[in-house]
Amino acid sequence: MIPVLKSLRFLDDAGKPTQRYFDFLDDNEWSRVLGKGVEDAYEDLFRLDRKANTLDKKSIIGKLRSLTQGKKSDKIVTAMATTFLELSKLSNFSTSFEPVLKEPEVDESGMPNENQPAPTQAPKSHVGGLTYRIEVVLPTTRDKAVYDAIFRSLKEHLL
Image 1 (tube, helix red, strand yellow):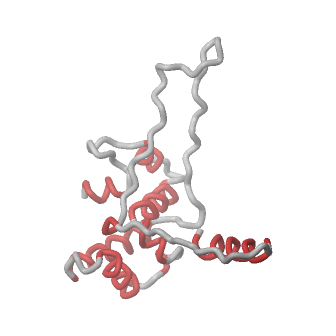
Image 2: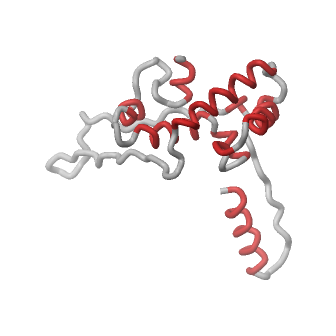
Image 3: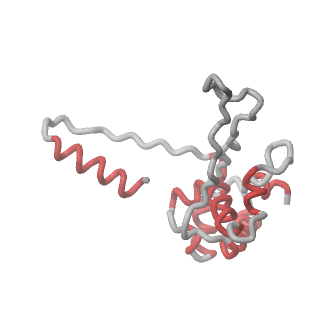
């Protein structure tokens, strides 16, 4: 259970509760906070399909097999898919939850208060440790419309 809570970023590497955990305790926001945690924990799966939470179990298993590159047994991949599906059932993905960060306190001189801890962000976790890098070879042209079309398409399909 601890590894799941860490991947959802409810616990930090030392096992201490994070701000996301405390946000989860809000009765009105918990499902959105969980949704954001699921999106973070299964970031690579959501990169493959932005609506991964709507896929059926067979599709999720197939995508996880691909992401793990055969390094996980069928039993493990099925357990990963089951965990994802169960967490997704409880999650609200309709709107992304982003906690409001407090502005740093300033002293009389207008400088940030050094006693206030800096906000930290948990390290990103990746399913299977995969990193995707996309290279685009641009054509030699002076027509701005060609470049605009390429970048518009990239934005539409990748972001």
